[in-house]
Image (cartoon, rainbow, N blue to C red; front, side, top):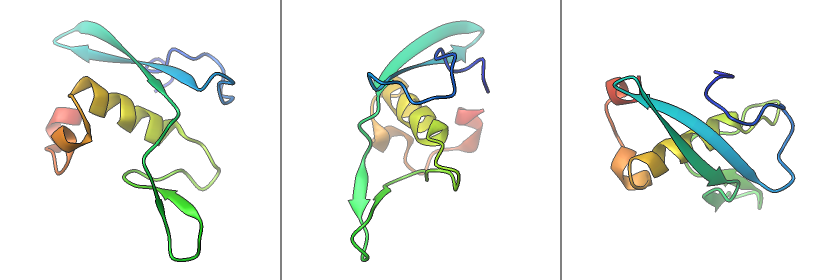
Length: 88
């Protein structure tokens, strides 16, 4: 997974910008996303990510990867309820 992300450190990017590589038929495509994520306010007043979840240790790689995947395919609606083979 580390080869997918262009950011070389595991720290949060101070500018909030992340680069993600995808390969389609062996051709690399780079997608740049920010760290503005779709959130929903839960019943206890905290905010949680709307789709994929932040890991228990606070790592954001899953939500950043999902955002980049959605951007690559147009938007979140285009990947909603999608086929797992598309992600693979």
